View 1 (spheres, rainbow, N blue to C red):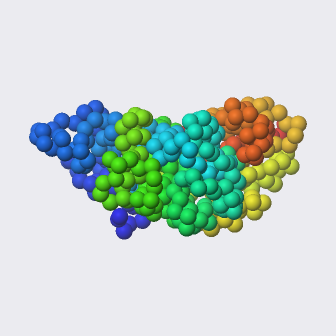
View 2: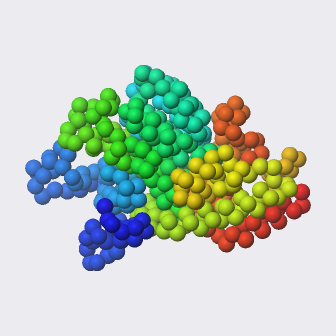
View 3: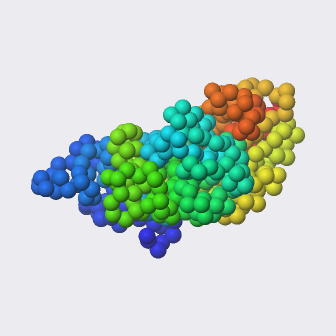
Length: 411
Ligand SMILES: *Cc1c(COP(=O)(O)O)cnc(C)c1O
């Protein structure tokens, strides 16, 4: 680990691993296969020696990005995937077996909710709890519990999980704690600081940051003792137990399932990640300004933003995220205002799904990404029919406030 700070480490990461011609970016390696001059060396790499064989298992380009993610998270090692969902899939499907029990926060991304339904269909017992209080997690524990899963800031309701207390409880009970840190990013909060064994990041969001590449990663923080985890195959129980979990995720979840990050996307995400801290600072302060302006507006009935004192986890968020509160804002307009009409009047906000872009995006979630799950699950997650999810970008803050208030004007 470099002694330099977060951004210094990132912007010098590639060149410090020695690149030809003094290049300051790791070059793209589009090669599908990697050739060997020595057959014994070829066999050694297949048997576990560091090296490259076939690009489905990774390339020097994905490896350079993984090194950056590991540095950001202060972890041991990372594996990258084609998307954040692929990273979640690889984690759940390679580490859980039929009959195992998973405790998950009920405040989670819609597609993750759908993925947990698939897992349940395959015989994994899933209990959804209100993870804003560790007591609910503890109460759900069974002898078969293998894993606890939460999102740091929940998409889209912005609930902030009781992350530190859950981490302490998992440590005391020797349980694997997996945190999806996509919405906080390692700039606001590193998974290892709240006791997570594994951290999932969708790289498509803030880390890539520019809405032009999809990716995901799993990082092992080094805090979990894999020698106590029952579902590691014998073939991966070699060497230090610290590496076992991620080895199984890489072999089974990347090599066998095949959702590999392309070199092109890895390169784009890698360049984008260099400005993560700058973009997050701006997006978080923009989100705060917008949330305050909307909370004071008579035509807005509710604003969900951890930076507002009215947010139930406001104090916790301040402590966990160093006085920043993320860049996702939930808004409900007064009853009677047609949200579709309202959305059509916005000029700067982009009507699009996705989040963590440099541009501000807005989406009526109950009618789109949370439509398929139905009204009961939505109610459990605290998602009203009129809720708008705003992913605040890096624009000039007054432009965002003016655009929203102008569109509200005629109602
Ligand atoms: C978007 C998102 C994901 C999935 O990431 P993709 O890269 O879009 O597959 C997972 N978790 C959270 C919290 C997200 O916001």
